[in-house]
Image (cartoon, rainbow, N blue to C red; front, side, top):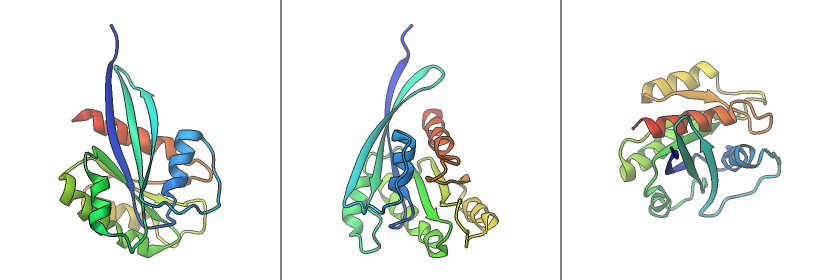
Length: 169
């Protein structure tokens, strides 16, 4: 019997330079480049996952992260999102605080969807205590993971965990 086919849209959200594009490139292409590439608007990449009894195609939206973003433009990218990875930079504490606004903007457009909070750049000297990241995520009711696009730490695991959550509902 043929596997069922599903397509889901996920967004990576967070401030500029937290590593959203690098996480996606590590996950989809298994490459890392530490040259900063600013995202204008949104870029979309696709990954096909062979899960237990389904084939899941995830469309990964890399949404602009500049603080000056026009929230009406950004929120148009949230339309149709089935889940999100909220990304902060473990070397910049303010990026964790800003995730509350990213979450609020997403929820305003989409309502409750599966979300995982990622503390990226965990290979560098962290200025956010991993326990604080976990407490922040717990307060919002989401799981949290430390990731490193550079080393690949937990990158596949984060996308896999979100993909599985997408298939639960």
